[in-house]
Length: 250
Image (cartoon, rainbow, N blue to C red; front, side):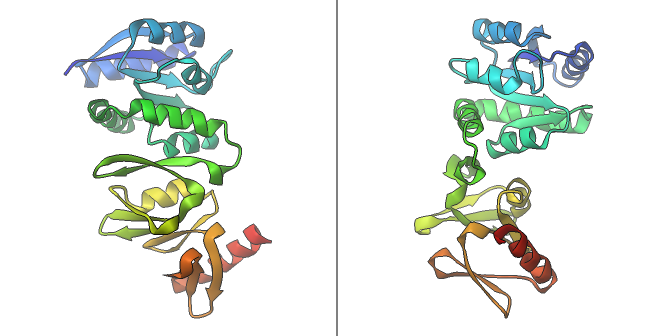
């Protein structure tokens, strides 16, 4: 399957590196446009309608996020390229969108492009891009939504509705309010990574809890959550967990 791509980055060298990696690793990807100007890049996307866009986050005049928001129908797969920016990476991860950190590592590049090619077939780009735009306009992280990969596709849930995540044989059971649960194909480590800065804490190798749903802590090492759910706290994490509670809850 041939795939059309547009590359947008204000740095000439970064564009050249991306172009070279694509030509070396993916002959099936046809580069139909490149630009160092975000305004010109926006026109390329609107006129050429690529299936895949490599998009720098930090650019003059217009960020990659701003550019995406200006696209009327962002139904293409995106791979963001950024110098390390925790805020940008966090926002991108929430939406299950690909990203690369400069300088671009070849192994990471191949992994991101392979996932993008797979995602093009699944036709979920529009929903993920819209979710990113929505989240960027929400100042409170707990009110934002994340994309959860399941066997059926993607489900989008509010972070505040997640009570806890439980690792189950390489999968993760995401437990929500009202006794709803989603079995995700992603690992518990994935959820810990994207949620650990948003009032979530990994109390056990198999459990990540939302501190905002914590009702009480029992001395025997049990966290009691909303709906009277009991989750074990490992002995090795108990002290740090209690210190975290003091810091976050005052």
